[in-house]
Length: 131
Image (tube, rainbow, N blue to C red; front, side, top):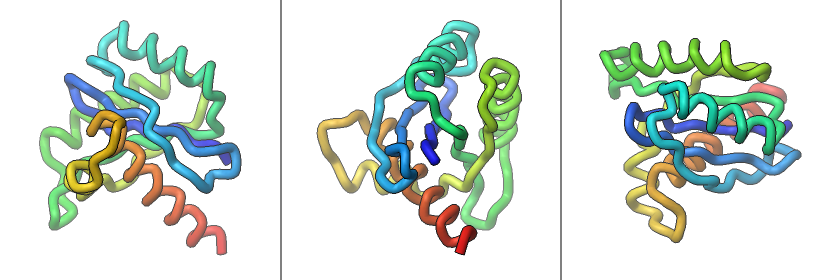
């Protein structure tokens, strides 16, 4: 199962994609203002190009699991994304992805590395759930 992951931010959204088997996550890039009409259009183009079976969007929750203003903004983005693309969209806990991206470094943008960490966590969770 090929999955596209989004580490949503109102200014910059990191994007990562898995291989067709859903095993390896790789940073893909950044979409500016993803919640805007232009940003949603760019995401729609990415979905058409990458052809994922599903999209996972990081849900920012606190260490205690509570949802704040950023989580509500992300949920509104997810609803807009669902209306724009014909692919199932789900949310997944993104705690620590930005910190991991900052620690790992690399050539890819930090936002897309955070999306890759989110995607890796999601793929591991999905594999565990399937067994």
